[in-house]
Image 1 (cartoon, helix red, strand yellow):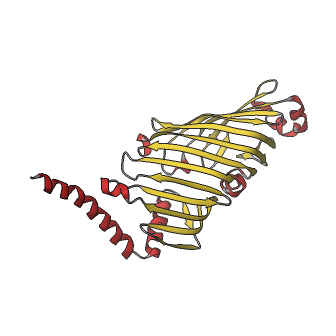
Image 2 (tube, one colour):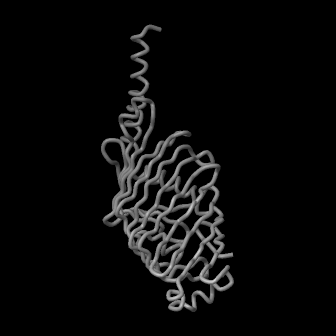
Image 3 (tube, helix red, strand yellow):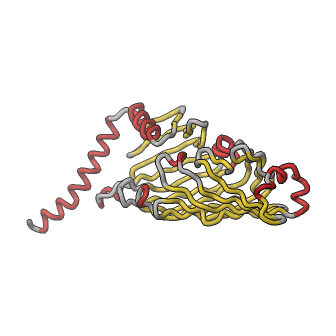
Length: 280
């Protein structure tokens, strides 16, 4: 096989892949694509609702008022969301999907490679916690604060590796419950944490909450399961209130008395699942 034929084949295969994807997307109605996506999410234990769904130029889909949820209720709501196949990677024989969405005044964006050893990225900036229904649905809490997230991942399911950095500024948590156990209302100047993926599990190395009169720390792990909402939790929440803070919320700390390990230090085991956490 001469060099010219090799070059033609090298360009021809990505071009054929490109044309196939264009034809597939162009001739499948938006309603059909929406149904395929909804069924794929349903297989993972999630629901999808949207007021508008259609194709996005050149190779993608778009949605407005997109809501992702579980049997408990809504978890995420996007005002607008798009997902597009990146064109340039196709010429290298790779499929990379870029996604972007808005939640209130904040933005979510990233890339996803669906192949077995593909890489994925995630960035969240300027999203207000009160615009994320997950907290109300899962913990019954009223939350405020600005969220920033940056993550990089490689591989799929049990073979996945990567890390995710999380930060929240000027957070306020009110009415938080783990199962039936209430936690103290508090304002936190900063919340910072690191989640690492590897060995078939997600490990929260430490989520540190520096508050007004209280310091809290959450750490532990959960296996990577499908759906993730059913993943069993193995977490520990530590609360270290100052005496003044404790006096203001005596009733809550009386309920937590069995978890007191020393004066001003509480260690609470968090079990259950990601979708339904509980205190053991």
